[in-house]
Amino acid sequence: MNNTPATEERVWAVLAHLSAITLGMGILMPVVGWSEQRRKSKYASFQCLQALGYQSLGYTVWILLVLVIMVFVSLFAVAGIVNAQNLANQVTGVLIAHTAILAGLIGVYFGLPIIAAIACAYGKEFRYPFMGKRLVRYMGYDVNDEWLIEDHEDRWVVAMGHFSIIISLWGMLVPFAAWILQGKRSLFMKFQSIQTLAYQAGVTILFFGAGFIYLFGFFGFIALAGFGENILTFNSSQGMIGLIILFGSLLIAIVIILILPLFHIMGQWAGYRVLKGDDYHYSIVGKIVEKRLAKTQSAS
Image 1 (cartoon, rainbow, N blue to C red):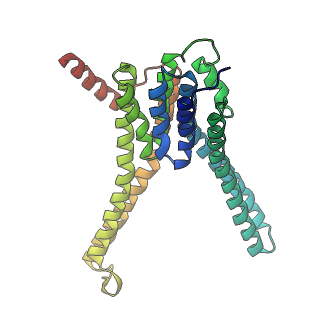
Image 2: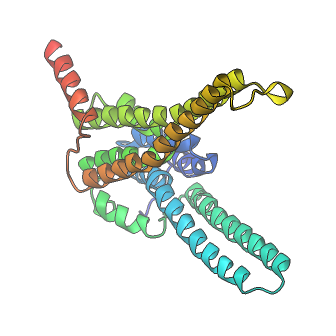
Image 3: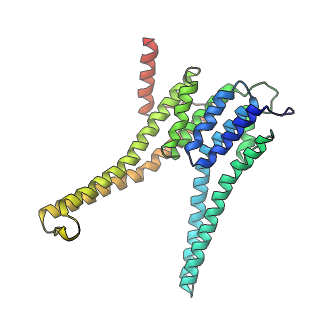
């Protein structure tokens, strides 16, 4: 773009990028910025969509990258410790290396949106590595049209709502904001946002439910078996019941925690399918939401 963006455009772009440093809570800002600027400023709209992608899709990529790097570092560390003569120094070195790598990755993750915000504050064009150029093509940003491709805007926002499932609790802000701000304009966005919100709410309830079940078992064990000097012997029926409740609740909580990644993967797949042009439906939630919306439309 040859013309320097106006102050309002730059402010929205800066806020959208800087919201990445709020650890998930700020993911609402790019959606609000895009909704506010989508037919006012091509520059601000694109930067807000790019910031949204960085905080949802980019967050997923960063999490996977960190896990892969830490696994490889741990494997090399274990091999080094096994062959080490001075075990104490080797363990200390491994801890320092882990901390340094993790701190470096976190620094890069937060550093990129800060650089983006500074560039946008001066009205410059900014592209995130790997994602930026692809998003330019997807949105038709480099074409001499006045606005971005509307269908691709909607699909990007919807897909990022699916991807944001990995951001526990705060990820629900994306589909919620898209539904409230743009649901009346686009039936596609309304349906996708509502089903995504319902799906993520269910997964979030499962996550916190696992913690509640474990605490229930723990406090149930304390109540039945006693605590400290008052603890009963496990040979007593009351003590055994408390122990069964504790291990039973622990087992249920572990099973729930182990299946949660499957729900996350399904959310990522849904986002990918939406970007590829599908009107994705979750198997159960999608059908329920579709029927409810159909009844609402027929009633109105």
